[in-house]
Image (cartoon, rainbow, N blue to C red; front, side, top):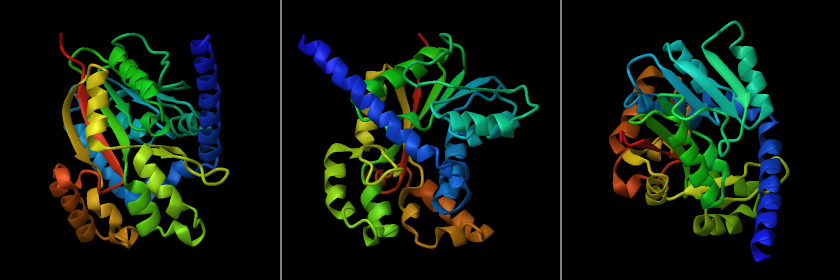
Length: 284
């Protein structure tokens, strides 16, 4: 009987979490998020990190939790066939419109913990969003195991996570959200203890944030070999005039070089917004 109660409460909690997720993403902000400031750095850095381990041969790639499809369109432009899946119907509609007339992108609404793809269906997996919105470890491990299931042996799985300290460094220090949300000053300490980013108002971002070692440990628990773990933006995310700098080619190069130079410094791994762990399904 206690097990049934726990399962019921878990289902209710998950429904609440998904409702909060949808309330945020239906605002449509994700479509343009990668077009300025930290988003530009995140996009450029993520592409180069993925290309380090993506198979050279043009093959099938799954973009799970791929949002409006910026990475799916990029991959298709490089010659890959992309299976895009996202929990938010608006994102699937946006990618469907953006990829009209193409036959190299397949998109559908789907839950990262229950994928509709066959075993070993793809040669690489991008999991660049789902772990943001899975506060329970068992659900994160399930999403990772699903990614492992659908990738061929030896294939890479790219897993993004929000840094545990992003709320304080970006939300408080850089964006000064406390000016209109003073409660964030009390909330940020709880976030750093639990990792959970609770919604502060209807439609606000809600999610989960990782410590670097924790992210690597979860990949290993899902039976993925950890090939690499890097900070995406690193301390460059703290630059206040980043949007302006990214308009200048010389400044852009300086920013990206700084992110690359600091990406594996242990003391600085969490000093940015995002982490990417590259896992690999064992060949045998």
